[in-house]
Amino acid sequence: MKLLLFSDLHRDRDAATALVELAKDADVMIGAGDFAIKRKGLADTIEILQTADCPAILVPGNGESVEELTLACRDWPQAHVLHGTAASVAGVSFFGIGGGIPTTPFGDWSYDFSEEEAAELLRPMAEQDVLVTHSPPWNCVDIDGSGTHRGSPTIRQAIEANKPRLVVCGHVHDSWERTDRVGDSVVINAGPRGVWHTID
Image (cartoon, rainbow, N blue to C red):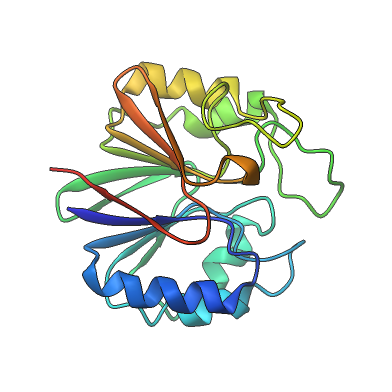
């Protein structure tokens, strides 16, 4: 299965258009959150992305809530919006969790969760093929411009426990398009240009 991974479009219509063109060669596209900016302009990118002719797995970022993303995708039948939930596409299982984890310093507009809240959202996760999160795991593709790790220990623990083949994330812009591993799990901080990954 050929996967097109992306995150953090932040209302960039040109980037969304480029992804739709790339998606002509994809079996599934995976969007790891932050389609909007500060809870505004979600339709700017979703109305473009929904023209892609392949299934999509999406999670909310900290820039939009799961309710807002679900509503924005109401006319996109091939989209699966996940947040503490799972979906299966062509025999491949996906689990998703969105939002800023741990809580960000950005204020009331940011769709954030504490590590304890994230643990509850991740509780239904079983051994999945692909985990899609907005926030990266701790100490893995999570370094910001100051050299500080911004990832989530709880997400890392879920990866260690459930051993997904692939983890797709975003959120920390300075680590876009970087790949690392947690155990045998490949972890990719996707970014808005799109990254290809194939799973058997």
